[in-house]
Length: 139
Image 1 (cartoon, rainbow, N blue to C red):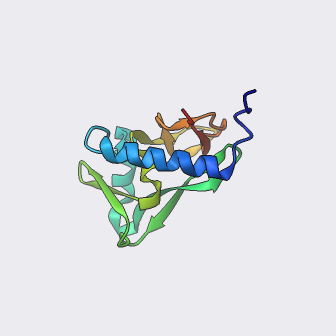
Image 2: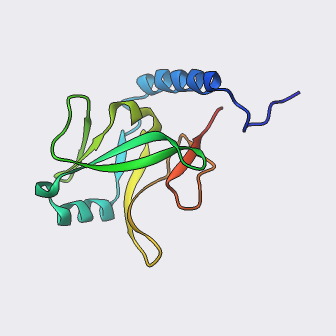
């Protein structure tokens, strides 16, 4: 008898995160922490570092179990990880790295939505239509 994917205990999720962390440590040099799209880089340049730095986090919640959060920080904290590309810096919450490794931070400017967005996340599945929440792959 198989257990539906929706009915997974917190213990199961924590065990999977430990496995992800272990795998992440082994492949840290092979997979970039976070890719920055050209649109993202251009928008961050327009905003400028004098207006703060963008911090990306993953938190529990949202309609799929986890959600992406974006904050503005005046400076990096002691535990932030800095991703830099073409002179643009983005801060990653240390606890969120394994949820974001290999994903792309993009900026979209559309009629329905304007803002930063995470896409192509290799550890995410079953995200919501707005793209702000996701479930982790449990394979």
